[in-house]
Image 1 (cartoon, helix red, strand yellow):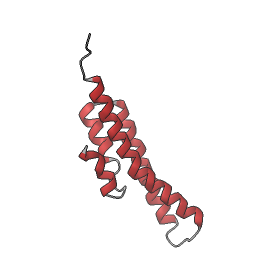
Image 2 (cartoon, rainbow, N blue to C red; image 1 turned 180 degrees about the vertical axis):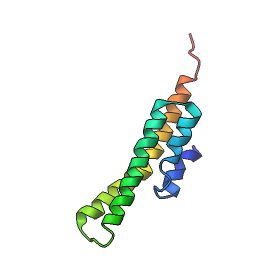
Image 3 (cartoon, helix red, strand yellow; image 1 turned 180 degrees about the horizontal axis):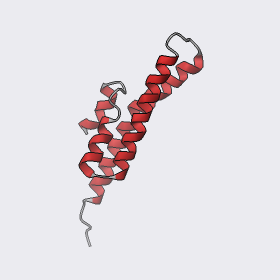
Image 4 (tube, rainbow, N blue to C red; image 1 turned 90 degrees about the vertical axis):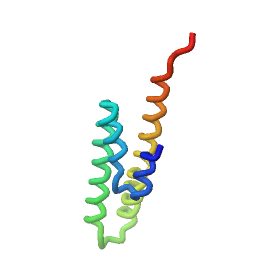
Length: 95
């Protein structure tokens, strides 16, 4: 649960950390895919910020806000949904 707060508290800069921890702990393909996607989001956000540092266009601002939103909320949801799915798969079935 605390792992899902890392992207929010770091304002998206550490957005790939929860997916990396999930990938290493569970050795799952979904964890590695999430790690790759959120790393790409971070790189795209940094590149967009650098290219439009002195640009005041609305499109650059909208892109930055969307990338920031994706970098904070996306990993949090990935972490929480993976935790819920893992919890449900480990519960024994009652017959």
